[in-house]
Amino acid sequence: MKGDSIGERFIVTNFGESHGKLVGCIVEGCPAGLPLTTNDIQKELDLRKPGTSIVTTMRMETDQVEIMSGIFNGFTTGAPICLIIKNKDADSRSYEKLRDLPRPGHADYVAKLKYGGFNDYRGSGRFSGRLTATFVCAGAIAKKLIKETLGIEIFAYSKSIGNIEFNSDDLKKIQRDRYSNEIRCPDKKYSDKMKDVIISARKNGDSVGGIVECYSINVPVGLGEPIFGSLDGELSRALYSIPAVKGIEFGSGFMSTKIHGSKNNDVITFKNNKIITKTNNSGGIVGGISNGMPIIVRVAFKPPSSIGKEQTTINMKTNVESKLIVTGRHDPCVVPRAVPVVENTMAIILADHSLRSGIVGTIIDKNLWLSMNYDNIPLLRQEIQNITREIIRLCGKRQTKITQLGDLKKLHGVDIRNHAVESYLRTIVIQESKRAGLNVNHGVKILDMLIDLSLDVQRVKSSQSHFPK
Image (cartoon, rainbow, N blue to C red; front, side, top):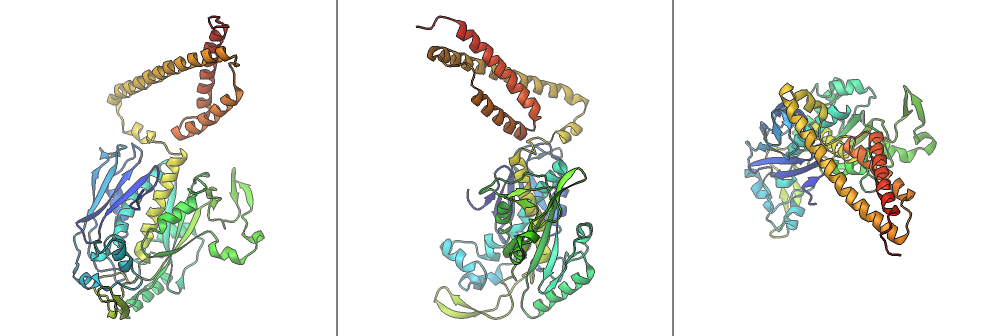
């Protein structure tokens, strides 16, 4: 799979360029029956929209999302969902001089070499933070999916900018107040200090970085597919796709290197009819699998590389050192606008793993049921009848194979019962029942019935005497 897509069951493919006609994404694998409107996506997009504050770029994009497919009568259909955002305020003039003068700290140099100079350099093309609008589009769908089905909630905030850092374990306050100001810090005193740091950097023709901290609560136990599909590994992969990300840690993270295991280990206990840990140094993920505690991740963003101070670079035509002052419209700090991007990127991965684990099925039954009126009952009955016919057809096909198996067992004197095979089948049925959203006990009962039928067929075969001696 190329780098434009992520996910196995909830698959997001990103397309477009910063100064092209549009940016967009295709979401595949979203279950049918999820109630979804343009507003569900737009309200998330508005949180990262540029040109809304002195601490962001002055590029005035409206970021109006358009749903092109996959939604019908206010519900997802199970088909690919195509979302686009048209670029309406791109100004490429300042990028002409950057064609041969790569910005220090930016992808200009590596992009030109990798793509032989054919890459779209305007607004950084595919390497622009503009593309994170598509992360938010897809993430808004994922966010609603996991909230509706599992009750998962995700919220991030600006933890630090420059040397100003806000620390709190009051999750209710963080969730409630994180968007109460343009800095996206839930405490006004700290947000004002962070704002001063950003404004000071901008006045000096410079930029500043910071940290976004994100929480995911109500995550069920069991998400993650070790070894190479570990939950923290795949969250990290997705978060590192956000431009300017240079560090990620979960739970106690790098601080755990400075304390003993006796302090870092999370003591396991039982409270309110639930197994929990007294502390959460693991950040909600152990062995690559969610343990039911809040997932805590901190994402470090470097200072943006497009700054007004004079810097030294190389003219790629002449290989001669040159001086460069970047002009145009750029964020002096990406942290405030990155907060909703981090939230929605997290949602994409959690939605993917919820589907991969089988905890969330391919149809949101509750919402389909609520959307139906009395006139839909005959249609639903017809669908059930069609499924029943298919089950009977498959049972007949299975019995034919069982008959052939009985013939072979009789011919070779093999016992008709194989307990090891039956045990293996039970394991498969349990796994598939979970994936299909079927009660495991019901799945096992169906298997037991099929085994009994198989044994009856093979006993008949074993009592017949038409085999050669």
